[in-house]
Length: 188
Image (cartoon, rainbow, N blue to C red; front, side, top):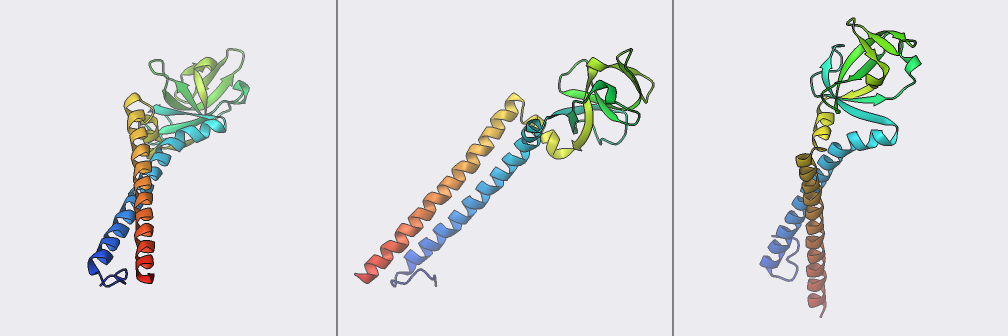
């Protein structure tokens, strides 16, 4: 028997329990969708506030970044500060979001180039920045959300989560109205 059947009507108590279960379900799904939204957007938006920018890895000559498509966080530093052993991202010629990652072997400030560990050189203007962090999976999904289709999906995830939480709030108000309505009927 339901704990809400205080006026002797078992059906009202079961209906109240059903509404509470529905409210819990919509609240939980709403929170899950909001967490997915935040995990998708924050890894790309938040670093920009602190002066970092994100790129996806095309080629990893270091072997430490993980796999193709991982996201690296880059910090722009003074060109003279690139020293041996630093990990740098070199802009690919065919894409503005993909970078190749290399170890630095030397820095020639007069020629405006750095020598990469694989023997190649890269001009200062091709260096996207110094690699300071990486995020393999979440970062890759975050980069996807900034394509046209990704923006649409991200907005839909946010709207669905917000809608579910608003609907759960509406159900909560109905439960309160029903509960206080029953108390008034019993007290009259």
